[in-house]
Length: 105
Image (cartoon, rainbow, N blue to C red; front, side):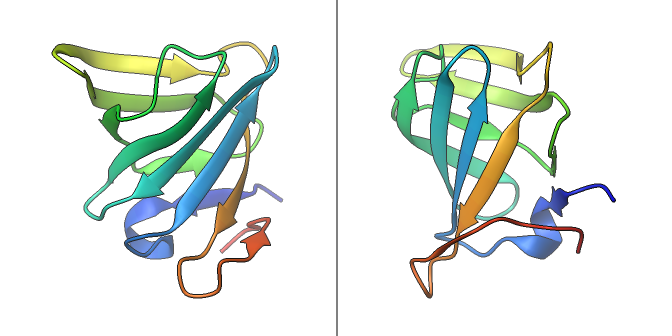
């Protein structure tokens, strides 16, 4: 079965999604509601800390498509993470602070 997050239904404000993709890229993004995320940690990716973006669907093993990216003064219309092998993710729920892999909802 497909492991996915339908962002508007499955995340709460303050939740953190930890993304990984090859080669060795890591990004943690905090959810701020209405599909908006802010990068709070980044390693080996163009999306650095403080970057904001919109995303509405996250599917394990598929590329992550984000839009309306703001990186400091620069804006991009779209960016794709994990173009070749897709992304992996796990969620840290705000209320518990515990990491949990998300499965089909």
